[in-house]
Amino acid sequence: MSLPDHAAQERLSNGDPSYTLKVKRQHSLGIEEAKRRVDQIADELGGKLGLTAEWEGDHMRVHGKGVSGRILVSDDSVEVHVHVGFAMMMFREPIRSAIEGSIDEYIT
Image 1 (cartoon, rainbow, N blue to C red):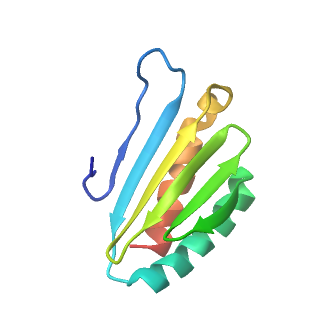
Image 2 (image 1 turned 120 degrees about the horizontal axis):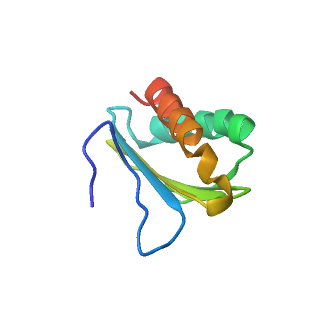
């Protein structure tokens, strides 16, 4: 499912006490520049949220205490999927704000 530009979606389903944040932004940077900027986002969010990240082809895996996800990079978009576990649910809005703020600053 593709989300519209500047959209975020959360999901609580089937009694699973977790939160999934999805954010997609269009860009005209090209894949290499977009990946360079995603590195900057990962560095910034790593400091703010205690995340580590590693590239696997054209997507970056991110993980930290109670948080995991991936950032998909293509020629014209960056899409973030972050799963927040139950223990981190109370921090979901600050996590969402940090992710959206960094993507808007570096990608759009």
